[in-house]
Each structure stands twice: as C-alpha cells, then as structure tokens.
Image 1 (cartoon, rainbow, N blue to C red):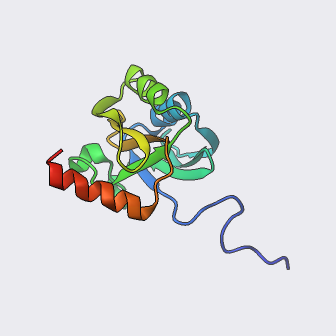
Image 2 (image 1 turned 180 degrees about the vertical axis):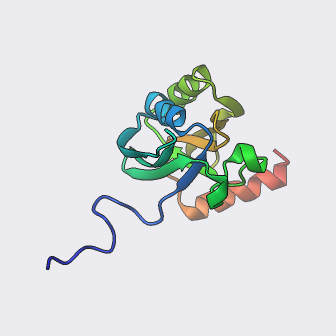
Image 3 (image 1 turned 135 degrees about the horizontal axis):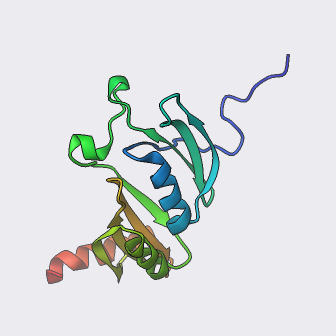
Length: 156
C-alpha cells in the first residue's frame, strides 16, 4: 500500500476555510480581483457549494456556502468577521482599484507604511476584510521598531 502524505501536495499549513453566503459568486470575485485559480468545487443536492478550493498565488483557501446546521456561519450571519486576510500582490493600487470596481468597500486607503509596504484594506462583498500590500522596501525588525516607536513620539 502506498504511503499517503499527511499534508496534501501543494498545501500549506494553516489554510483558511471561509464560510460564505454566496460561495459561487465569491469564487468569481476572487478570480476577477485576485487572480484566484479554482481547483475544484463540490455541489450539494440543493445546488450550494459544500466545499471548494482556490489558490491565490502560492496559497490555498478552502470555502463553502454557509451551513448554519453545521455551525458554518458567514460573516453576514454573525455580524462581521474579526479575522483579516493579508495578501501580497505585485501592484496594490491596481488590485484595490479592481476590488472596489468589483463591489468591495475601501476600508483604509493605500499608503506607504513604516514597515516597507504600500498597503490598504478592503472589505469584499462577502464579509471578509483583506489587507492588500506590495513590498516597497526591505526593513529590518530593528528599523521597523525604531520607526514604530517614532510614530508614537511624534503623534503621527
């Protein structure tokens, strides 16, 4: 019998699993905005997605339509989601622009941050918030701390 790897090939640990009201529409949004690639989806007898997997860059995300009877509740059902997803992209400005045009809400405009990223935050139409960032400068942890501390000293 062939030995099976405990972690499927290509998967990372951990992997986000999103409960979404309207998973099929979310997959299309993630494809159009973030360039996601759909690996597969399992459709239940009611037509809802019971499980799907997408990849954005080299990271995988699992998702399914919300299923309250299974305890799989979307941010819309529970009144928001405290988890934020962080996504590095080649061009944060273009990605945020694409997201807003596709129905996302701009939560924090893009700015050049002290830690070396150009970053902002959007909320997708499905209740998840995404930090969108492009690395502009390599900053050591020591320099990051110096800059962070300086922000509090100047009140900026």
